[in-house]
Image (cartoon, rainbow, N blue to C red; front, side, top):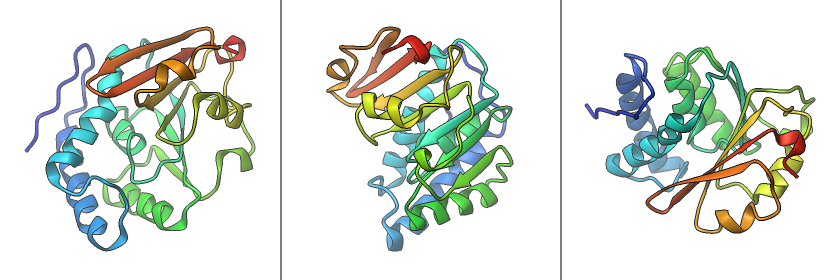
Length: 194
């Protein structure tokens, strides 16, 4: 079983077992349903680590979160495993991927997840402490789409690629952490970030 460790962050005892179960489920369903580009155990494990890596930079312990464009479960399902006291709403408008997220919720016994088969902008917003998204759209659009879900205490954590620096040029309160080709954008105080 793969051992995951994050500096300055304690993963729950059941995390490795849940991550291993997630890997097996994703490998099985990916064969016929093309859920994600991660097609083998090693790439899935790398995506799991990518999902939890920025937790070391998260200064608070959020109790509420939304994930925009949850797809195959990266990062939201993995974050829900890592932070069982945080309640996540996963927004995934594609029925196939939403059904897969429902399956993961059930199989991994994640009572801290609600799966919403809709776009985030179609829901009635209420502020949360954490907003996450990976490879959905540009940062400015994500901020616009999540309006009403953030206040001055909300942290936005975005999983980005090489263009991350360009995407935050006009933002206040943004910080980037880098690991290999991944850039993690943290934006604090979203109500005054733009």
